[in-house]
Image (cartoon, rainbow, N blue to C red; front, top):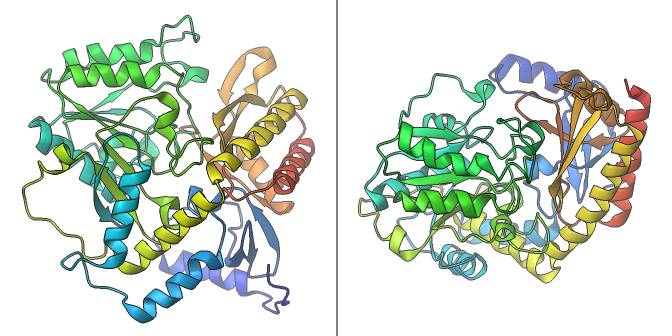
Length: 442
């Protein structure tokens, strides 16, 4: 972080006041007194009062290689002086080079890309592709899933609090989430025989025309609270969907680019190759970028004219190329595996120290979660949103930023930039432990 001191007393209050006055009230902020951030470098950010924080949420898993990394910002500066915007009506060097690279690093036969600005747009494009390719309309999504803020994306999303209006797209059907800690069937893995997956057969037979366009799912459900499926889940679910004519759309908006450790994309941990994959967030280290990549057969089925005014703009493409350079050159998937194991071990130690409040620890790589409950030691798994809110405040006091999510608001989401080292993981665990200790285990 820069060393310069700030003499900005009261600036944070003014920023918060203007936010309240001029932005939609539905634009949520973390914390009782929201943080007004003004600078960042690497794994740390600074607020307008000069206080520094260790960022272990990375702009919702978006700052994949750290804040303001010069390996991304310098190519961006050069690109804006060369060519800033032309729309997809004209091919450019950055857009074709990025598309070629994505074809190389994605699994299976994924090859052809359409660029947009966000995960919402990427998922919408994917659903359209599935419908056009199959000729069917109905799409299977998952409870606890999140796909964005458009009308279609809200319909795909299965969180009441993220829906501004009733479901508008009747062709979307929601299967049970593979949420083992809160199994919707009251079963336990592995004796459950993964019935949350096999039930998709009956879902299709009873709530659809029997022929579906596709199945859209995140390898690990992000907003849902980092819900992590059992190893067999995707093979079972995708096989059923394909039997009924559908394709698999893998939403890698939060799980992609090595974050789960050891492999470049999350779904590779489950051994299934999608016909369509979407990504956004961390692909360009914070620059607007949505990606929908498909097999040639599926992509070629889209015959209508289409374009994106800002999708695939030269600056976002250059940022994505630079980000991927770092991910590959530094083998960040391996770092995610190593530091993720260190983080997971530390969180499990916290669970042993605070067994009443911490009900579950789950995730993969640098996408880890702890779920807070009323009293795990007494078998009371009532979601403890109050404890999550207090933990957020206690970690903030100590200079650590975590994420929060889950349907009940009781899950801490922990996902630092993928460049994190052992010292920062240790620091975050120590601060989290201090925060829990301040709360007590009751």
